Length: 202
Ligand SMILES: [Zn+2]
Image (cartoon, rainbow, N blue to C red):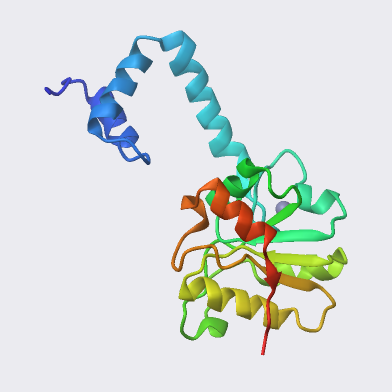
């Protein structure tokens, strides 16, 4: 495959090939498609990207993505269940299965397995505790991964909530060890959710 010799096109190919699931070859096909559809694709895409760049931020309270133009869903409603996930991809996977329709809390990662408590690394744990207290939440469903870090994070959250009356459950062990929620098939995720059990915190 030869280079196009057009610097703008080469730049675009470089950027697009960094996207998940795309290599240089598919990036070239995408760019060609774009160039051949300037009005139908390039213009609206440019506009949509600019809007996302300008208006989409992470909510400091629940970790979800929100538009700066509207209040986040976490501040506008009362709710009694929160499903805690590590990242947005995990939330989208759970949402797409339709197993759970309540509110989410996106931590933004996990605590390291060592010195977990002193190294929260900007994880949204304090705001989770606040949400539980403010909304009289009845159940926290911990859907962090089954890795050591995921477990450490779960126990830390459970420990932080021990003074509240909230019921804390953890996804069933159907989740493979080290398995990330994002890569689970619907069936495994469904049974892990359905068979979730109270987290015993000693
Ligand atoms: Zn929010």
